[in-house]
Image 1 (spheres, one colour):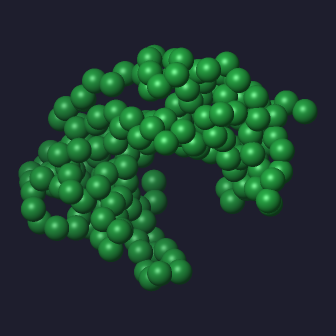
Image 2 (cartoon, one colour):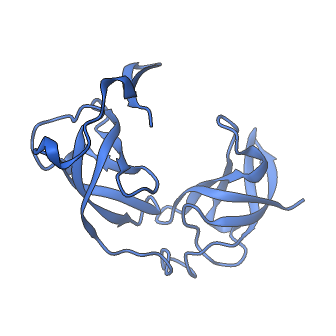
Image 3 (cartoon, one colour):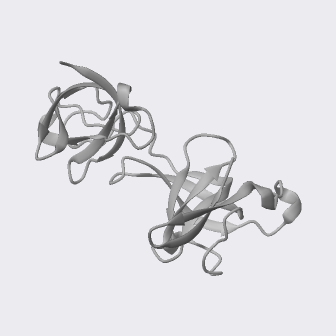
Length: 185
């Protein structure tokens, strides 16, 4: 039976990803694995695409078959309908940062999905940015992730330029590998 869902992640370089089925939109529900060989119409997948697909279970994992509806163009054109331009001088707030892993997420001031960033993209050389820090950054298209990410991330120096985040907007999250903090919006 055919299902509808949303592409959660698709790595167009390695040719695999995950689809969140329409009936599985609740947090913690299993996602459906998709391999490029399962794409029936030849259109590559991009995060956020609304797709139709069939599902089989193999070795305890849900796998997508006969996937249609991708917006990424044919073959390895990597999202021909995607804006790949660099957007400069954006602002946001650090939502999460995992110093031991070297990556985190930014809440975009202008709205939109949270942006991934890697610690090697920190401009100011101050080391890890605390959760709630106000930052400037550029948004670029990441072919491998199939979504936008942040680069040239730098702490905003002038406190008057952006809204100050109050301490009560932070919450502690206990994970398997230790304690972390997350900004609650």
